[in-house]
Image (tube, rainbow, N blue to C red; front, side):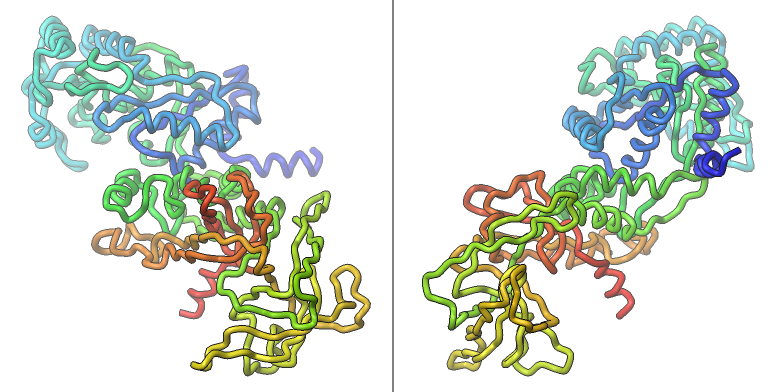
Amino acid sequence: MSEHKKEEEKSLNFIEEIIEADLAAGKYDHIVTRFPPEPNGYLHIGHASSICLNFGLTRKYPGYTNLRFDDTNPVTEETEYVESIKDDIRWLGFTWKNELYASDYFGKLYDFAIVLINKGLAYVDDSTSEQIASLKGTPTEPGVNSPFRDRSREENLDLFMRMKNGEFPDGSRTLRAKVDMAHPNMIMRDPILYRIKHAHHHRTGDEWCIYPMYDFAHGQSDSIEEITHSLCTMEFIPHRELYDWLINKLEIFPSHQYEFARRNLNYTVTSKRKLLQLVNDKHVTGWDDPRMPTITGLRRRGYTPESIVDFCDRIGIAKRENLIDVSLLEFCIREHLNKISHRRMVVFDPLKVIITNYPEGQVEMLKSEDNPEAEKVEYRDLPFSRELYIEADDFMEVAPKKYFRLAPGQMVRLKSAYIIRCDEVIKDENGKITSLHCSYIPESKSGEDSSGINVKGTLHWVSIAHAVTAEVRLYDRLFRVEDPSSEDGDFKDYINPDSLKVVETVFAEPSLKKSRFDDRYQFLRKGYFCLDKDSNEEKLIFNRTVTLKDAWAKEQKKN
């Protein structure tokens, strides 16, 4: 066997090993996977991992992936979520073969329930939810049979039909599988298959008032679609026995469930319930707030689909849960943005520089590299004039040794322009610095420098007369602790108060006036940014996607 082949085999994850063995044994000639979200919220980074897994497998092996909405709970589901989920999957670069809904199968699932009743494997229970719970037993003690467990087939058929016809109120009856109330797996102790809910469904309207439980709808939907490899997270391991039991008793296509571990991200939460709290309690502006771990939030913040897919590929899948460092996600986006981002100069805290020996009224169009990392380097025009802005913290009146930025009598290079020297510091009556008088070296023009002067510092700048103003939003991690869900008290108590800082006015080079929402920018020495949807013709607003370096890790080391 070649070294390349050995390396390829080593890189297979455990699900790929199962699939390759199944295909080699002739168990299937192609595979079918599915991504089955419940449309009760927006997808988050954890869902992205599952999307990449399911769709990635059918890119690698012959077969296809279905998108199936698990819409069996009409109370929490909305069409808005359906549309957002489809949009997120497409944005990540994946296409499903069939768009399906568990509600497509309500009639078929009802027929399956009738089969179980006819086989003596399901019964209608009049017990309340509290009574059912009290009779279920404990992991070390067997449960007790419901007093309604031995109803006749005819009575069960009649009652189940009347449940369907809307004759009974919510919670008054359920349909339960007849398995074993002493089973060591608590889930197998006569699990509920159907409950009564008089609620309007986003697709079926008021046609149904009984709805299948997830455990009943899931495996049977897989079987109807002939899913070969049904991939779930580890919390569904105890449910697999019921998944197999129902398929076996109904004698339908034998889909099989395989489990992989969740990949939780530190400094965030991915529980839909908790994310909904953040939205409802106004801790964030919505599901697409750039601090949210939702795909739509990451997208608005400036993350690219390539960076998220790369992140999911890097973390891989395994059988053991793990807390993934968000720094890896940030590494993936930095790596991609470094390749694709347009370089721009933006001054956040301006200090005026007057170049006293540069002709008044003169404007020189300089050339600056758009992206030095691009395969084909392109240039943009950059206006240079007598009056400029630099960053206030790029100047020190009394500078220490080895300070390479601007100071009295000291020289620096202006990026893509000239070398300048600070000649005079201008202050107001209160002693506050208002501007710097500098001189430039005409022979030091970037790309044509014949001055022979070497300087160690390079500053970004903008021409005051040509600068455009914008607002920038500096986003950081939403939580200040690594695992907010495991801390004492309310997880919202650990929200990072500095997760958003707004700089209302920055000064940018004029090329940013032509920004588009799909553009990505590196603001030199500041970070990576993108245009926010709140922008309009009168006001540009940019979101910081990520800093140039991992500032958080550096800050934590200080503490």
